[in-house]
Image (cartoon, rainbow, N blue to C red):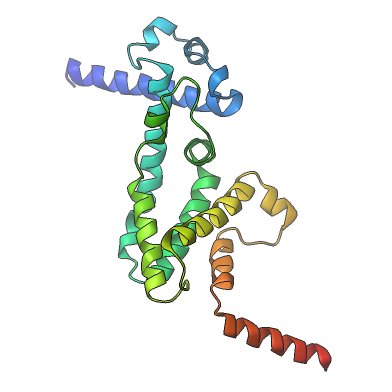
Length: 216
């Protein structure tokens, strides 16, 4: 191994240690309560030396946010292979739920936190991710095929996002399982989605059938 290659490995390893320490501290203490000195102390490093890897606390948090978005995007790469848009929406929900449960710090960073005081709001907000644009396009396809009814794309996206985000937040905190111990977290979004997309006429048939059954 060349000296340059070894230096690159050491540099990447130290950068990873800094990011992992920062992610843990940000999640535990909050953005504004974590300083460069505190991050450096966590890995037994000097604050001055840490600046060789990151120029500021903003640089660290934006790098973590980018990492989180990359992980979220990587989990969705196979969605393009699902031809049926409704099945694709279901899978989007499963991925979102799994991400919240498996990567709670990144999920919180991406979908729950507002811009820290030390971070430029425009840099924090960034552009719409490709994952979001793909989801919006999938919803549009579902509307065009009549699966989700005659409503606007933006309204439907907002409703579905709110639904899966609420389920994910309940799941990642353990509240979903503690309140509903028999619920299947992996399929809950799919089941909710199936319920809300049952055509009204079918729902009316089911209501009438139940009413007739109750009268017997």
